[in-house]
View 1 (cartoon, rainbow, N blue to C red):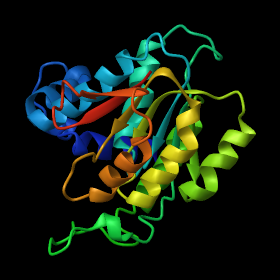
View 2 (cartoon, helix red, strand yellow):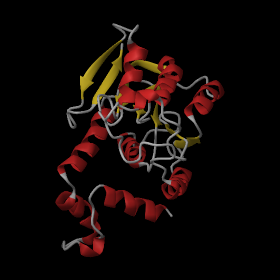
View 3 (tube, rainbow, N blue to C red):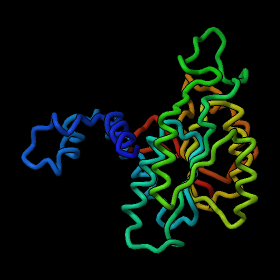
View 4 (cartoon, rainbow, N blue to C red):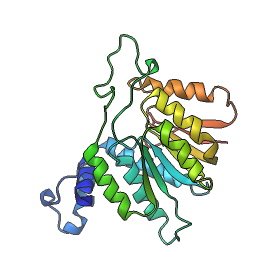
Length: 245
């Protein structure tokens, strides 16, 4: 149920059950719980999502996340946009698309590991699968009409999606693919749909546990000098985002 999804998300972000919140107005209890209980990292994570969405004010296009997993960032993008776009009509509102196999990771490539360095615990085929979260996300998208989940492997879903939606351009892409082949596939298929001024937020760029994303980034953008610039996320300085020129 949506209630279970929200509870899980709140717990992920550091909330405590409302019954444990000793505040004078329980209508404000969840906010107070977040203020008191969320870690600095969790505050920064939400601030990063807001930072990215605010930068899209003058950029046309929708939102696409590649690698939804349990939906923490996906739900955040939807809710932030809902607040920012309050009062806008249907065609004026951005859509949020979530691409994921929802079956965990595919096979790893050699670019996804570093010799003599142990891989992260879930860096294997089927890792990071969240079936229960997927079921809840489906119910969430049924209530949020500007959202859609596209289930399947990127090399089988992204191009067909764009062919079926020739009018769709993107203002923002969130790459949380973890792996080399997945990241390369997404970049190959989505770059031309990213509007000038559009943003790509990389979740694991330069991350030692996910080297494949960085290798794919370097290969794809090697011949695109002058077509983009890289920036540091203010709220989470270890993260990087790209602006298309």
